[in-house]
Image (cartoon, rainbow, N blue to C red; front, side, top):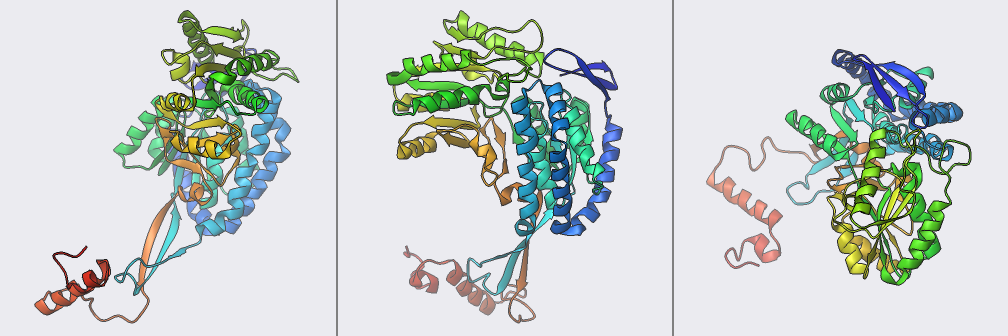
Length: 509
C-alpha cells in the first residue's frame, strides 16, 4: 500500500498494520524516456546474441530468484499483506515462466517453412520469420507483483526484446528487487523498472513499441485509446467476475474446498477468483452449509498458520464492504464474515446468500474475500446467469459428468474454463490466458504464442525454380498474355475440373 508524500516520492506501507516500509522516488517522464532510450540501444546486442545466449542469462536470473526466495517472500508479504503460503506460491511458481520460455525460445523463434495454398504460390518458397519488438512496456497491478511481471517479462526477454516495467505504485518494491537481481548477475542492460502512478504509466506506454497492461477495465480502456492514437500494438488483461457452476452430480466435498480456496486465495484479489457461485436446487442447502463451515474455520491475519491475509488497498476493502452492505440492505444474508477490521486492510472471509443480479456483489468486480452464492433451478439457468456479465475471463464447472462439463464449457462466455478445479489454467504455460468481452484483448502464455506476441512476423517469398525475366502478369499487357493469365488464374482459383478449365463459366457450381 502506498501514499504520496510529495510529488517526487511514495510511501510504501504494510497493508496488515499500516507500518511504513520504504519511501521510493517517483520517475518522471524525462527519466522514463531516458531509460527507454538506453534499453533500445542495448536491445540491438541482445537480439544479436541469439536465443541460446539469452536462455543462459534467463536461467541465471531464475537461479537468483530461487536463491533469494526468503528475501523476496518477506518483501512481498510486507508490501501486499499476503499470508506466507500465498507469497511463496508467487515467488517460486512464477519461475516456471522463465524456465519454459528460456528452454523453448530457440525452437519457437526458428523460421518456419510454409506450404503453398495454390498454383500461384507453388513455384515460390514460402517462409515466415519472427522479429522482436525493440522495447516492450509492461504495466502490472498490485495483486501479484512478481507473477504478473514474470509472466510477460520472461517470454519478451527470451524473444529478444528489451523490457521496461512499471509495477503498481501500491507495490513497487518486490518487482524492483527482482529486476535488481537481473543486474546483479551481470546480465545485459535490457531490463528496467520505473516507479510512479498515472504519469509514469503513460510515459511507459508512449516510450514502448508494444504494451502489455494488466489491471482494471477502466484503465485498460485508457491505455488502449492511447496506443490506438499511435497505432501501437497492445494486449490487455482486465477485470473479471468469474462464475462457478455447481451441479447436482458434483463431488460436493471437492467443490466446497475448491470454491473456498478459489474465492479467498490472496484475499480474493485474483483476476480469476471465484466471484459468484450458482448452485442447483437439489444440493444448494448442503453446499451452502458446507461452504459456510469451511469459511468460518479460516484464520485471518499475518501470523504463521493464518489462511487469509490483508487486502492491499483500503479502497478495495471499501468496495468489498459496500458490495456486502448493499446486498444485505436488498435482502441478502451474511452467513460468514461480512465485517472489516479496525486495524489493517482486512475484510473477513464472507459467504453471502439470497443474492441476485440486481446486486453489485453479483455484477461488479469485488476483488475481495467474498463468495456470494445464488440458487438456480437447473443447468440452463446457471449458464444464462454466468453469461449475464460484462466480463468473460474465467469460469469453473463442478460435475462428475465429463461430457456434460465439456458441453457446458462450450456455452460459457469465458476465456478459460476449469472443470472441477480453480486457477489450473494459470499453471498450464502451454494454454493461452485470455479475456473475452470487457476482460481484455489478446492473450498471454499459450506456448509459442506467448513469445510470438512480442514479435513482428515477416513473410518471405523466394522463387524455388528458375524464373523468366518477367512474370506472366507483369507488363506489357497484351490480349494473348491476358488470355493465358486468365486461364492460369482460373485454374488456381476454381473448384472442380469444369470450373478450372473455364468450360462452364455461367452455370458452374
